[in-house]
Image 1: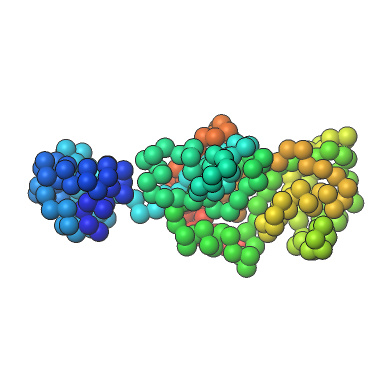
Image 2: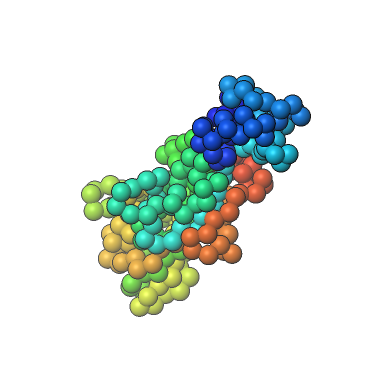
Length: 239
């Protein structure tokens, strides 16, 4: 990778600003001052420093966000704020994207990465990666609903969902539930409950495959995945 591109991609300035840093002798590769912006380096194998501080290079970035309501699961949108807008500039420079979508008014676990191969595996319909949601339902959720969801329900457009695992946490005029599904149709959780005559009034995703939401994250906060979490995602196989 060209040295100027590496530094620019890591947020150390524009290409023009990076070239000025090189001209000033601020950049060293393996202890040697390099002023040639076109010099190719291997950031994984060579030590690059800027004013004596080592430049940390990562090819991929993996972030867990507790998505707040009112924010779009998109990289950019002229009509409103996106989850990428919530990231620090030092993370935005990696050009990450949300893995799948959460509805605008839905909260909870959202994986954000620039690892396209991992994202494809997690989103592929053939993989049937489970996603679990906590929801508050307007109406009493019953054992009949559990049986219906376990077989698959018919949505308003005639689509029959794959079986879902419904757990009642609290039943009453308003019910608390957890629902695990293996697909991601548009507004699927809301439409599944509409099919049995009930309405979702609050929705939060709490897990995706082996990745569970870090409950210490406030709405809108995010953190990098641990190495263990990244390995769990990469090695994950649906049973």
